[in-house]
Length: 153
Image (cartoon, rainbow, N blue to C red; front, top):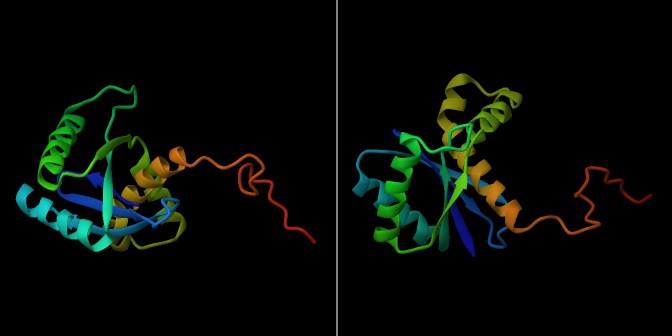
């Protein structure tokens, strides 16, 4: 089951996709928004290409957890997405996803132009990975669950 993660913005839609097992998220593309019809058509193409079964869309909440105008616009987009494509859509709190993406790109020492080019899809990757991690928490005793992994001699 593949899932597409979306970072819905006023000018772009960042897109990430899960692997077939639903464990990891990878960046896919950034859709430059032109019209709702064109945006939905581009997403439908990605659904077919990646054999997607659901969407996870970042919900831009205020820091206090309340919803503002961007959250309302996102909910309207989700309604249109559901009607046009017919797949389940889940909303995921996206607070700080763009900040985390920017931090990662700065640590990678990418130029400002390159960061601008990929920031939305990186934010989508953070949104989707958070959702995936919440669905598949590490098993107790997993080597990666506490950061104290030491390889056997």
